Image 1 (tube, rainbow, N blue to C red):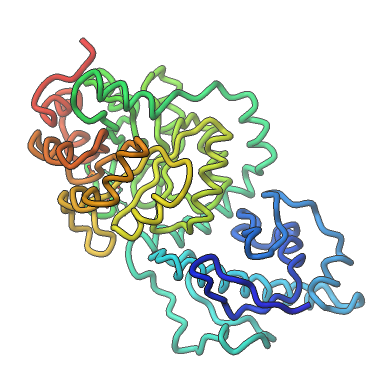
Image 2: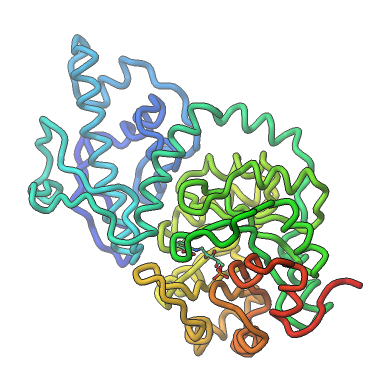
Length: 408
Ligand SMILES: O=C(O)c1ccccc1NCC(=O)[C@H](O)[C@H](O)COP(=O)(O)O
């Protein structure tokens, strides 16, 4: 069966010929490519993969779907699967580009051996560039591989069982609203971060539990815990240790989420909220990840960098928390006027109408910075560097706000 798949936006049609819609379900079920099996395909685009964890396909069904003879060898079946996976990747890329998603989720690759699909999908060799265009793209490509490895060690079925026995989550959004009411300042999400790609090592003698406890004493409403090891020298063990040490502030798992599996994993490690970055994810992926987060009792902080991403996020139902990151992905330059720019006009009006909480993120160092983003309309701030670098992070919070905001 052949057919053109309608694109997600603007009635555009993409030149992707599907050998069989049911094939994509089969690809997911044989677990050859985790990125394909992680997300269901859009029902609107006629792929039939309604569940995240599809049933295991029979080999005979698979061969039929792939259009290979039932007597074919396993290597020719694998090659046919590789071709179909590649087609799905190309198709997903097209959707992402059409929505303005800036980060490519995988290095572009040339068509697999034996590919004879439509011309539009064949990239000439000289167009296959495999260097990431910026740090977020580099991190994203790395995450894709890292998550694949982690999934092997922690299968989803085991995570689902662990989630059933996990203690309830704490109300992340409620804690921010309460702190805002209590102090009159934006609620503080204080970041437990040892290092970052832009700043290198921020704190040599880094004790995540000690820092978390100091932040809590200092009046933080919530904490953000970096779990990425390679680029931020964080870890899931930090999240777990902070949770187990009896810290009461709700915890944001600060990760680069590219797969629903990560949400389950974060939940089993003590997270109360997860970060979803609009520059990496399509609208459908955000919707789907939001849905999973809610089912697991987690809040989702959806992060945007520019007006286009803000427009996209405002079009997605059910988002309560929007983060505006003031750090440029391309240059690392921080400009807090980005927060003000994105909250002007129609976007600001919609945010107020929906009573969303906007979080001002990155580059906040002084009481003037806090006053500036508050005047722009934020009800919460996410702060790392300026407080984690202090020898006493508790006092660092008082310095940031210009007064003591602790409960006492
Ligand atoms: O901080 C980076 O270098 C960075 C690079 C690539 C992606 C994300 C990055 N930072 C994550 C953050 O958003 C910040 O940790 C967070 O907003 C706190 O910022 P700051 O107060 O400036 O430490």
